[in-house]
Image 1 (cartoon, one colour):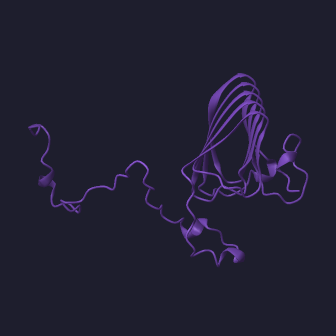
Image 2 (image 1 turned 30 degrees about the horizontal axis):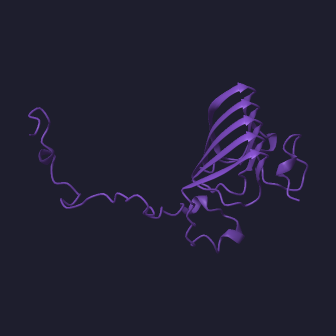
Image 3 (image 1 turned 30 degrees about the vertical axis):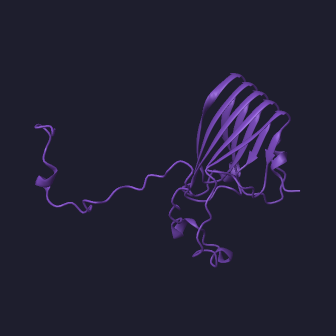
Length: 192
């Protein structure tokens, strides 16, 4: 029964939506519809990227889980990260270098749970970082490298939710690896 106090939607004029239109709701187990490509201004203006400018951007896996009981989880270089990456460790460190992973204009989510150990995540310059979480004994901190402070915004965002009992959660915005020595504690990000 319609609400008599609600305004009549047809009183505002015709709608652009056909009356038989229904949104595409994915069925469990069905792959979601492909996302739109990145806008051209975010794909890069470098001459080497000119050939790839019209190529479609490959889709990421929706979720990914990395974990170990005793040991470290380390990912550097151009590794295949999912839209939502979850790491779980009992004792050990999480070290994720996202500088060659994050594309301009996209959002990645990282959730990390550790019992004892540090969580260190390097993000590319120009990326917005949303850091949240809980730490019983340790620090939760986001630092920006002095060389990355004047970088233009790329429209990318990394959402990090980190939980640790004993250890630090450190996120650092860094420029690309140019062969110089990274700061202490971040030497693992250097290409070998």
